[in-house]
Image (cartoon, rainbow, N blue to C red; front, side, top):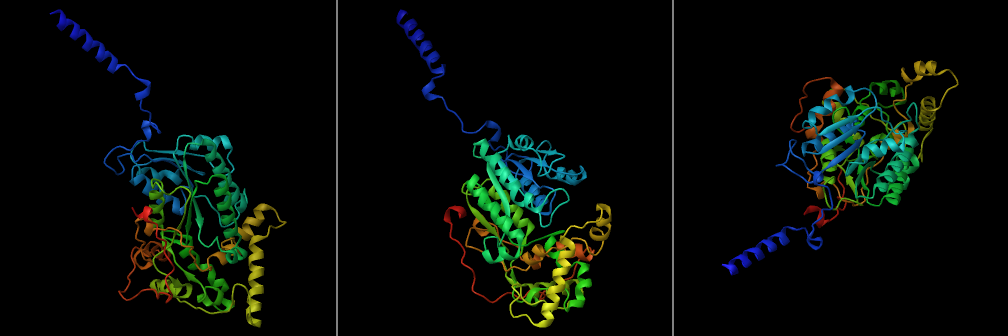
Amino acid sequence: MRGLLICHSNSQALARLCIRPCASFTQSRGVHDSYLPSGRGGRSSFSGVVATVFGPTGFIGLSVVNHLAAIGSSLLLPYRGTFERVQRHKLMSDLGQMQVREMFNSNASDDRVRELIQHSNVVVNLIGSTKPYRFYTMEEVNVTWPTRLAQLVAEKNDGTRLIHLSRLNCHSEVARKHSEILKQNFEAEQKLKEIYPESTIVRCSNVHGRYDKFTLFWLSPRWVSLGMLGSQPLMYDGGESTVIQPVCVSDVAEGVARLARHPDAPGQTFEFVGPDRFTLNDFLEYVYDCLGRDYYPGNSLGSMDRKDSNILQQVVQTYMDYYFWKMDKPRIRPRFLDRITRENSARGMWMTRDFFNMMQTTDITTGAPGLLELGISPVAYEESGFDSLGVAQHANFLIRKRDNIIRKVNEEPQPMPTVQHLIE
């Protein structure tokens, strides 16, 4: 009996020793438990992504928020303006998974931005501008703001992912000479890589979708006032020298959502383009034919570099210089008169020289990873063009014939990268 008691007491001491925490066997997690994914996937689960999306009310921001919410992400959406701008966003996420913060703009203080990103492990920057705003310049939006955001994300020093949306062709030195927008985007990319090397850069070609700027720009009724110059709409070389590769907004949004969780995304540059390449002239001929509008192409403007221009083309170029100067340059008259005579009339800043040249720059990729490496098959414009064409036509449906397709460019395919770890 004594031996049994001794064994029993030893077993109790051993049990207490096993229950007692030991420093050498203590397990510590690299992340907090609130960041661990849970659920079966979908909007009612949690993907482990806590994202702050800057620019959620824009054209691309609306789709990005929808795709992030679809995988069960916790979202924080800063916005400017009234609550109606983000009211429809609340339907995209599950209850309690989305927060909105009002009264935010790119001139917000650093403390305000720190408050918005302090609990996030993913920061998405979709803020950009193609023309100067009323209270801040285009450089402050495209260069200064991404630089500030990268510095604040780098201050956290906790591995937060920064996804920055840029524009395709900004790497081309020739394209940057003709468009200040591409120049500012490239400058922002260089500063982001210098300040925060783990930043993920996403270069997009012209994005099409519902209420997109690309399609509605070429279908704008204001081209009628410029039809006297010999073509409608007005294009360099009649649109024959410009090869475009537009991408669908849903593909871009899905790609951003996958980059938020991909283990190899930090520090890389991605290029999102569409599956087909065609000239701008063939694209506009297809679009105008689908809408039943008259299309009058012509080479009345000459080339973008203005080489070998005849006398008539030089006259048109001089008139366009005056046309752009009339919209870009500030005036001496009071502000309310300036708004009446310029912004709310045919002279409004609907098109600047930088934007006009950027829309007619040939899309050139550098071989960086794209949608295919992320497992996304880009959608052709013929299959998804109704979203933008239906808005331009103010119609609920469009009838497209089976043989009504856009002529593709007969050229050698550009080399696609082979990134095995991205496919896996």
